[in-house]
Length: 381
Image (cartoon, rainbow, N blue to C red; front, side, top):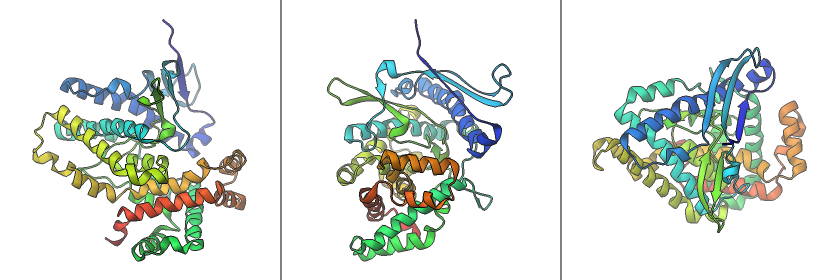
């Protein structure tokens, strides 16, 4: 029997790893594969729930962190997993996903989130143990921006967004929309990292162990003979956090749903997620549907909670969509400045222009949708 394997390790000097948050990102991913997924598997297996946990991620053979003298004299993380390309798992479309892709992703992340809720009800000490092992990944820490290069990208792309609104006042003709956008700009336009940090708030009701970077870049699809996606695998848990499920949901929904599809399938994706979440939660816990402990997770209550944090995905989309829509030449400039000189005026220039008018229009449409959905109401509360 021959197995195709992939090995994932940290690279670079200790200073590079520290500056690039390697000592947070890589250990957190190791923790997911070594501790979180096995704990969830044990929970599901013991309950007999019909949840296909074996198809959540590629098979993992080794997931450890520590010192390996035969390999290096530095602190290392080593992840060995199955290469699933021979099993016909491939990357999906580069940017926009259709409804079948979106619903597959929604169901799978619902299954993952449901395990946190089930543990909260049946074994809260185990949930706390898993959460305590996650190294915090903040946008602001001890009153200071934690990852300056990301903050610079956030600020430049926010500047682009508001400049586009200034150039197209017709987009803000509605009084409520204009008031929302103006307050968003006034409150967080110059300090978007503070807004992102706000979205990391935790509570004892809705917070779950997250994928943390859930979008089409970090999943692999398997397709049927007719080209329809039939299965999906999650990969790359480096930005794993404990927080509101809105972080995972808003990220892939704002990044991967095109404007013309957003109106028709937005509610469908959310309903698909919630239906699967409740199905899994009931199957694992064996609670009756009317159990008082499930009341916070009713569809209405859940949507009300999500609405307070869905701005997270919108701001992420404003940051990333232009680069995803950029030319190869523009991308080369973005990468060069990001790795070499984030304070260079050339970096600001390319971030405000890459992807052209189409990218500017799309990020504006993302924030307008965010306003229409009531996701900016928190600004007024």
